[in-house]
Structures are given as structure tokens and as C-alpha cells.
Image 1 (cartoon, rainbow, N blue to C red):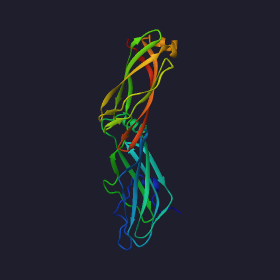
Image 2: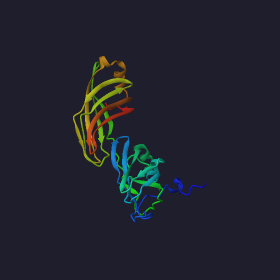
Image 3: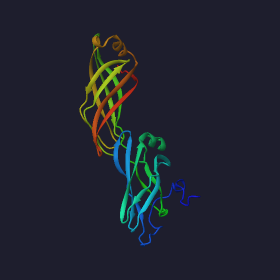
Image 4: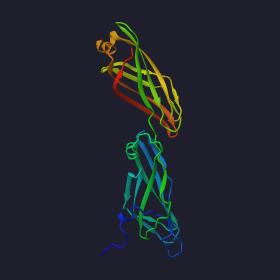
Length: 277
């Protein structure tokens, strides 16, 4: 026997709303969908929560048979989910169903084609639902759209490496680190603790800078000066400082406050740098 109820996949883009099915008492069940709330956010992405509330003012029970949802940005699906476990909606009560969507920043950047979109991307939550009392049709504007929260990593880029003093056993080097803030709020970086390797050899470990403040969508520069004991570091480092280019690894950690609490940032970069004598 054919199931008379609509198939769930056919309802994928239908949003639950008021206005279609009326109970014998004349009271109309309806549904609301809350705005997205940030459950957790970090440099990897954001977890959003939406509350789907089924309002049943009638004197008999309803049943939520199944629902599915998808969250999109820039026309691409970033997260989706479904439930086919029936849930009762008791008479004259509300059923609250949590919809939790985890969005990875990498997926957002691929969807928008940029790691720093000029315009903050917008998310769209689409919901489909099936009930034994009938399908509630969509009403315009019922789907949820809002700017997608993204916490951007402050950029840390080493530059201007130069040897300012050198002897057979000692050398003094200076370099800068450009600190860039891609967020729409100011960043107050705590002390930066960093390490530097040259030519595959450790040169300096856990040296520090003072705290730095970076304006929204701004940048600043942190200056470093290191006195190197070449007798201790060995001939490989001494020879590297006399080269025009050398391989390097620059890594470290810092922390700063955000609207969503204090966050720790680990950074690491490697490549080749030009030594300015």
C-alpha cells in the first residue's frame, strides 16, 4: 500500500510555517525558527544553534515525523542534517528541536573563493519538515539568513632579516614580524613567544615581544633583536648568516581577547628569506 504522506526528500526546500492545517478546535499549529546563536567559535570554524519550535495550541497531540535541513553560503552547502525519529508534540505545549550546524572556515573560503572576502559571507538555513497533521507550507522570508561569524587568525609574517654585527664567535641579527588583523574588531595580542631556526638548526628559542594592539582590519610591526653565540650554535648557522638566502622556520604562540572569549593562537611558517647585510 502506498504511503499517503509526502516523501521527505520532496520537502527538502519547504520551510515549516503557519497557515495550512487547522485542528478540530480551530486552533492552528505553527512553527518558528530562531536566529542562529554561536555555540562555539575558533580559528577552525563556528558551531551555530537554531531552535525549531513546534507550537501546538490544540487539544490533541501532533507528531513530528521527520525533518531535514541544510546550511548554505555563497550557494554551496556547508552543513546538513536530518532526523527520522518521530517526536510527539503534546496538546497545548511547544516542542523545541535543536538544529546544530558546524561550519568549517576552509569550506567557507572555498565557497567564496577567498580567505578574506571583501563582503562578509551570509549563511542561509533551509528546513524541510513532515508531520502527521499535514505539511505546513513555506511563507516568504521564513528561512534564516544572516552574516556568517568568522574568527580570523591574526597574520604573523617575518621580514627584513639583517645581520647588524658579526665576529668569528658572535652575531647580532634584527628582523621584523608584520602582525595583521583581518577581523572587524581590535586585537590586543598578548606577549608573543617565538622560536627561529635557520638552515634547519635552532637559532633562538622562546624569545618574547611586548603586547601589541592592532586596529580592526589593521596591522602593526613587532621588532626583534637577537644576540647569537656562534661558537655554541655551530658552523652551519655561522655559514648560513653569510649566505644571501637561507631556509628558515619561524613559529610561536600568543593569545588575545575576542567578543567570544580569550583565544590562543599558534603560528608557524617556513620558507626562504633574504639576509640583508
